[in-house]
Length: 304
Image (cartoon, rainbow, N blue to C red):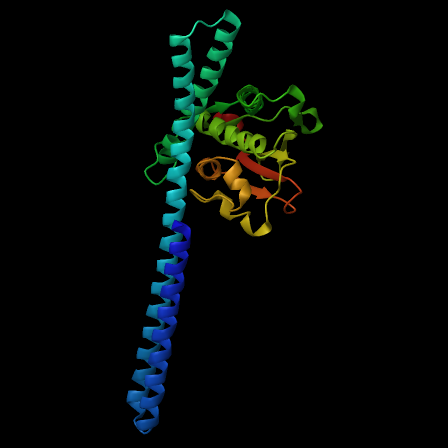
């Protein structure tokens, strides 16, 4: 309902801008026909007309952009509210059950496991929101240290497999040529967050059958390249750059089914840029899976 109202607002202001431009053109043409001999005034009139048209067009563009931004903010608030409320409600339900009912030991341990899982999910959402502020315009300084990228990736895979109950063969780490990835210099927490976000996305969008492949390989120019490939729904070519914007999620039924804050890929690209690297996505389109690539500079020998 809200989205329909905003679309109507966009259409109204676009139509209003078009009408204003049309009226100005008609008035100008009439004025020219009546004053065709006045050359200087004609020239000034042309400049005025162009200025008015440019102003109307810019005003309409800024308005449409602001409406889209507000829609993204609303979607973010709704997503975060859901991501915070759901695990809290679940934990409360299990605690009330334990408090008011006699539960056998095996069931009690199952309740504890679920509550721990929900608390991990809650902490993950909170950390995601806080990290967005840390990598944004008012970002904190990096805590640079040598990072064993291979060990970090294995830790992130173990975490994702445990968090989403993925079998061992669901996420596989393949070192190209069997070579251990080189050491990089960076902020361990930020690099770990970037890799974890890519794995979380790959698992969540894979559906019932998780088949994620993680590969690392050295690249020209002194970089190490990390690829996270899934066999999920894929991404339309027009969305490959937009998905890294803050709060942005690819529209459609999938975005409704798979909950998220729209911050994960924004954090990934921000972390890559802060470390002098790059992040981008590749996909042949819907139904062909996706591959997310993260590049970091290899640490120089003297910097280790």
